[in-house]
Image (cartoon, rainbow, N blue to C red; front, side, top):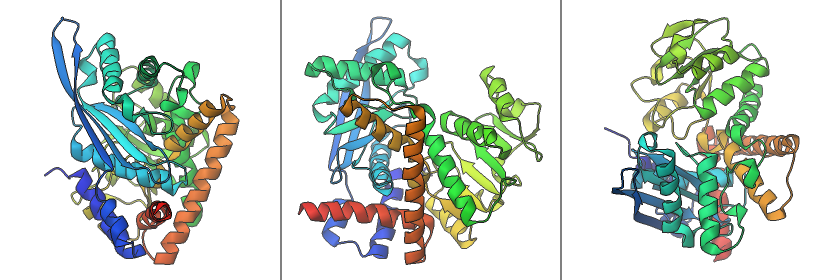
Length: 408
């Protein structure tokens, strides 16, 4: 049975409620999004026929600032998924202490079968459906699964046509030409590297630690390349076609070139094909693919001492309990992959200033945010004698609850 994402999110909230003695009225409000928008959007296809798609925007909480979160184009989009992701975005912005709330959007569609023109029409139709509920001070979308900087540019253009003025801060993850931020493309992975290095210090793991990365998409491939460039040993990587392993370390740049030819990493000649990346000999595991990848069925095969969740929700709640019992340190998604939303926030700030920073300035600011958040989560973990996940939730939910109470 497929895990219900929003049910998972509510279970995590229930756990943290008891931990931090969350006010009952606040807890009740945090069990549903503030607003759930749902529209049928219709576009004209290349063959002249009209086609209708179901579109959503979940605006979970804005006590700390405007709603913030991506829009995904995927056949698996559901109400439960967008609600869960909007809740997780609320905790993610709070854990890294950004003055933002949490939202998420999606369209039930397989974008791979759309032409570029159809994709543009769908992107613009999404904005026409929801633009009255979007804006730099209301709700700021961003790219997510199967959405790109180009799609963000189309959405920005449509929004500005509708409102009649420039508003680059209404959406992030844009191309540099229309107000994007330097460093945004790999910011999720870079933020992950910063927290991975902090976790390694806590566990006294050295540069020779063996790292396995599940998923070689945007986040996973950037993480592999950044770590490889810094001299770390990547012993295994995987994609939807399988996994490749080399105990002595893989040449990640060569894998990247191999992958660019359209082949799976499993076919890379510089290592051996393995059936299951979770069972390889590695000190550090980075799940960077889809949610619910680590379950009760495969969790016991994991040999790593440290797991850094670059994907959203890659570990089921049941598997999470097993990892905690085994004393395997898990740096949770709402902290580990918050680099993306941190640089999205930087993009909003630059748009508001109409003044843009160098890549070095962006990375310097990102490192401060991520390392500060890691150490604040670690303090909560120690304070409550709990896991890093619950430490992160204690910090984030506590901050949101405080803002809600201060508003009255």
